[in-house]
Image (tube, rainbow, N blue to C red):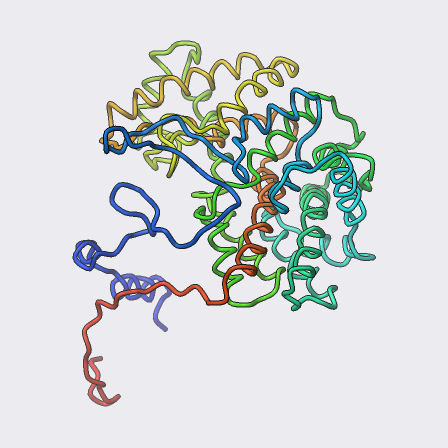
Length: 447
């Protein structure tokens, strides 16, 4: 019998395409041109990303701006933070319905989410606690698909029904993720099992901390920073991989649960939602490898070793630095950083924060010296989010699910937008570069 290694080698050899053919056939690899600009595949009113401006007709990188439904996310976050409110529910309403809610609308929407924040009878026992694994994203996908089996209107793609399904999923994602982790932690690590019920009087961020911790306790700063993280991860344009997946799969006419499971599969990838785990692991390796992390010269040498593929995972990357769209700055990272500093001070992690701050400052200089880049490089939102999750006591297994708990709002808005505006299946063209050839009868084929 032919070995799997041999079959894999044959598969790789037969499927390999000469990289020069992409340019010759004018193919935009990754749906991006040579300058990194995304190919326009649709229109959206949900969010806007600005990373460059034209000065005297020349495209020039600028500090990044992210707008939710036209509102600058910095103003949006400043609005609820200055009023000492948590913002997840308010911003979710904005993304789904297009306008900021008034007090009565916000109270009603929050009550609807609280009412939806429950799972079918015995779902935790029969679904979440079965075949537990460390991979919480796969568990989330399985749970979402199974929820579809409990929905008698699973295949109804009317706006009203899809909205109902989306509100339900937004509400239960924290339960699916946290209960899944507790189940894994109990059955695979032989630790205590905690299954707390959500409190309908609490926000999404507060309930996550309540569900996660054995004593259900948390501080106001912890809830505020986690809430901010969820708001900043909630949406990021229709072109990111998981939101585009949402549009593509929705365009086929399939059900909401299948769409969201597909988006979860996309987000799971380390090139998308799994990046913050890599940042934390990189810093752990840095602290083991560098004698004095307060010494800029030693830290710079480590960063150079990363780019030279001599440190950490030998991938040649400084994780958390750079973004497919932003150049001079990621507005989400700018907002997040100041509250990260506040939380680090409360948790006695100021020294760790200083190391992150140093790397954020040094890394662009090292990258500019080592690499030929066509735009600026700055810290992205993943640079600080993993650090925040760690000092909040959120286990690494839940880092990417935390992203999903936030991004389910954006996915829901994009699914609704696709259903409302399009009636054609998304089907981009692929140019075949395989020449035609004749069929060879069985007896004439080479041994």
